[in-house]
Length: 444
Image (cartoon, rainbow, N blue to C red; front, side):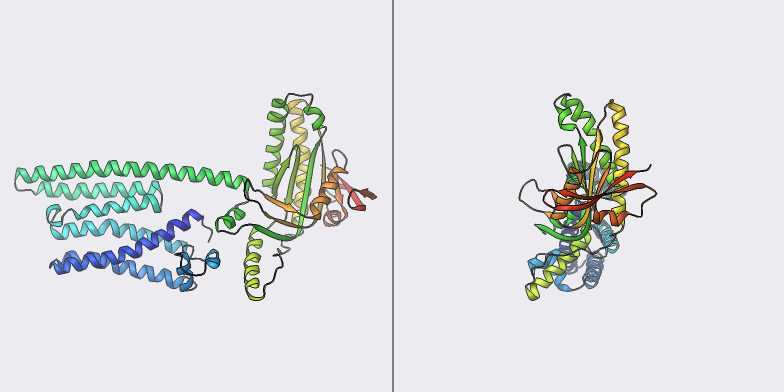
């Protein structure tokens, strides 16, 4: 199941705390048995029994007990990344945590009633306050607010009943003061916890959004699990380079706030939306150049990295993981349609700012190495001869046309309804020698 690192921490911690409360409930029930309060002792025993059964269910539904131990920091550290404790049975976990919170809320109130009120129970109902507190940290601030109102409502109902049945004025005053102190003290404490939890959730969401704007989501998850550096061999991708013709000259003539702050901003914003629309991966911008890759499958890379670790542990293999060729015929088409739409967007934005820039695009298809390296300000990038070839296709191309390598052309030569293809013959390409290339002109 797809869960965040924050959720994994919350769930693992909650399971540890729940295990401890099972023991505490048993001890508490034993104390009431010693005191002869059999009815009151029944509640903690019921709680401990129910939580023990659910806990055993979780352990049995994990692949092995070793995985449970690893999640709690016991066992082989290298294999902790593959642990599923806290990830198994998400739906079951949701049921479990709601049962836990409900029992934490109900059990102290039940003991309160069984022992005959606040004075006789020693204020045991205060323990129910752990329910909204726990919900704030292990679920969400919104859900904890619901539990808090339930807590206050039950407190007010039970104490009002005791006030109603009080036999003298001093007892009434005592119960009223106790009710006021509970409402006031718990209200202040919970308000601080609620505000802290809510702001923490907001800041976490903001930081996640920033991180996901820098790196692909599956790469972020791999890094958070401790997989770094990330180096994946991808057997077939499609690489697009796009460059605004004449931008360098214009930057010396036009004000930067206009050229970069408005025009280039709108261009890159429009390109970003197109990349998302076509299901591709923006790699980076280099000045006024724009780089996109199609065919990167981060989940496949993750699986092959796991196979690589297993293989290395058995026979010390050093071969890089290789992605499958899933979608091998899909991403070249997507890249071509992206290139066509980029021309359309440039025309629209040119008219908006009364400019006349043209776009030069080069595309190549081949293998790359993709990943994240370095220690600071790292980004997801691709390397290899295929990247250099795609760059050469762009630099040797013509404005308002798409320059294709031979490999790329043969992958998309069926798109004759969308593009007009022209063979350039053999041309001299720097660092590559003679290459047969093709030009594609969008028909619509």
